[in-house]
Image (cartoon, rainbow, N blue to C red; front, side, top):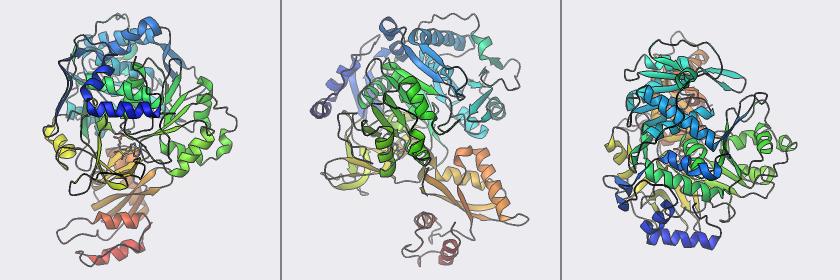
Length: 631
Ligand code: PRX
C-alpha cells in the first residue's frame, strides 16, 4: 500500500523529493501496484508535442489492481454500497469478491458481443453499480470506455458516439431522479438514427418502463449475462494504452474527448485519493458526483477501488425525498469522508441548519469540495454545521484534463483557509504566468495557472485531434500546460483559484462553453445572433445569461424565450438551459465585428455603471438599450 503523508513536515519533505527527483518519487509509489512488466523509464515528456509517457513500456491491467490485488485480504469487504433514489427501496452492498465476479462476467459478455481491445464503448447509464461494472469490464478487456452523463440530449450523445466511432452503447431503460422517471433508452434510440458505428446496445433494466428493443441490435443486460462465466483473464495493457475518453467543454467548438491512459492514471488517482482524504482501511467514503463526470471516474470508481476502499454510490438527488437526505445517508452508513460540490452545499444551506438537527454526523472526519470555487459563506457552513468544526474541509482543485486532484489540502495535515485550495500535491509543479508568459515568482502574485512538469494522470491527447490538444493546453504558454484558470498565490504561498479566464462557464460545477450554448440557441429559426456569458448565481455559482437578437414576428417574448430554452435542452441537455434570456436589438461589437463580452459580463452581473469606454464600439447605442432592459 501507498505510504500516506501524515504531517505537514512530511508533506514538505515529499514535495521537495518529488521535485528534486520525480522518477524516484513516482517509482516508489508505483511499486505498490501489480505490474506484469516493470517500466523501462518512469517518465519521458515533451510539452511541445505534447508527448508524455509515464511508466514507459510497463504492462498492467488496472482491474487486476482493483480486483485480484484485493481479493485475498479484502474479498468480503464492501467495495460498493449502493443507495437507491427511493429510500424505501433496498440498498445493495457489493463485496470485492462479488465485484470481481460481476466484472469478469461482464467482460466476457462484452467480448461475446463483439467488443475487442481498442474498441470504444459508450456508457450512458444511471448511477447503479452496473455502471461501475461496465467501466471496469471495458478496462479489463482493453476496450476504451466513454461515459456520457445520462442527462445529455440525444444530439450530444450522437456527437460523442460519432466522434469516437463507438461500437457499442451500454444504457438503461430509464432513470430515477427524485420524483421523476427519466427516459434513457429512447434517447439512445434517437441518437442512433444519426450514427452508423454502433453494432450492439446492452440495456440494463432499472425502472421497468416500456422501451423499444431493436431486433439484432438491442439486448437486455440480464439476458446478455445469463450463463456467462464469472472468470476472465485480464488483457495485458501497455501503460500508455488508452483507458478512457471523457468529453468536456472548452471555449471553442464542440466538446473534446480528453484521453487518459492506464498506468499513470492508475497511480495518480489512487495516490491522490489516499492522501487527500486520508482514507484508512475500514473507513466508508462517499462522493456524491455522477460517474458521468471526471469526479465520478477518479473518486467514486478508480481511486477508491484501487485503494481497496468502500465507496458509496448514490442514485438520487440531494433533496429527495427531503433536504436531509445527504445527512441521513451519512448517518446510515457511518460515512467518514464526504465529498461534494459547493453548489450542493449552497442549495442545502438555503434550507437552514435546522435540517441538520435530526442527524448525528459524528462519523464524519473529512469534508471535500470540488468543481467550482467555494465561497467563504458556504465553506463556513460546511465546516461549522456539517463538520461541527471537527472536520477539515479539503477544497480540491483539478480538471477533467488533470485526471486527479492537483491542488488541495491533505486532510488533517495542511492547515486550511476558507476558499483556498491551499497547496499543490507532491509531484505537481505549478507556475503562475502573466499574460505575456513571464513566470511570476514569489508570493502575493496573481495570474494564469499553469503546470511546468507532467504528473502521471495528465491528459495525453484529445481523441482524434492531437493538434487541438496542443492548441488548447500547450500553446498559450510555450513549455507549460495551461489550465484556463486564474489563480492567486497569497502571502503564505497558498493558492486560491479565481475562476476561468477563458470563455468557459461553470454552472453548478458543470463546465460549459459559451460558444456551445450560443450555437444551440442559434439553432432556433427566429434567432439572428446570440451572446452568452456567466453571471454570479447564489446557488449555481454561475448562471447562464443569454443576450439574443430575434426576429419577433408572430411570437410573444415569453413564448420565444421558452422555445429557446427548449431548443438548448434538446441540443445539449437541460443543464445548459439559460437562466436569463434578454431579447436585444443588437450586440456590442468592436469595429472588427467582435462581440465585446467584457461589457456583457458586467451588465449581466448587475454592474451596469462602470462599463469603461464604449465610444469606440461599432454600435455604442445598443449598450444603453441592453443596460436599461437588463433582467
Ligand atoms: O475552473 C476550474 C473549476 O472547474 C474546472 C474543471 O472542470 P471539470 O473539468 O468539469 O472538472 C471538475 C471536477 C474536477 C476548473 O478549470 N474547478 C474545479 N475544482 C475547483 C474549481 N474551481 C475552484 N476551486 C475548485 N476546487
